[in-house]
Amino acid sequence: MERYPTLSQRDVIRSFVNVLDVCQQHPDCEPGQELSLAYKEERVRKGRLSESEIYDYEPGYFLALAGWARKSDTLTGWDRKFAYGMGVCRSRNWVITEKQERVALRIIRIAEKTGFFYVSSSSPPG
Image 1 (tube, rainbow, N blue to C red):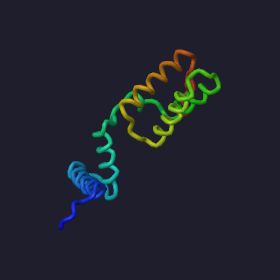
Image 2: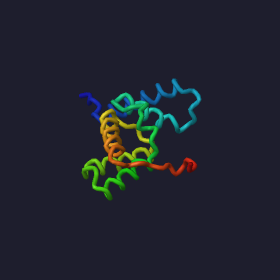
Image 3: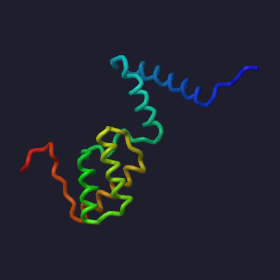
Image 4: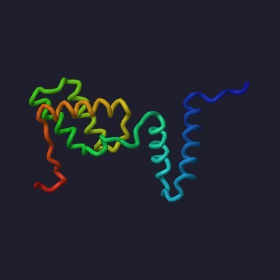
């Protein structure tokens, strides 16, 4: 009796095929980068956004927003936690979902309307 591959084995096979596809599409990628590229492309295919307005904000923006909201008691606890989590996501260069983008933009609008402003540490003052 022949056994069918388990779900995890199927996923491994499917991932391996994706890695081969990525290697063919990116001939200049160095050894070891194939898995990283394949993973990122797979995440984009699964509802993740490769381009978003959120990527223009640096991680410190969201971390500062979460701290400001805690001190000023402006946002809900869930929104503060989300803003902090978005700062972590941005610091790790993770790709976000459409839903995360919507929530982050809503939080940014609320914070800026209620007086939050952020001075980038990487840009010169003035």
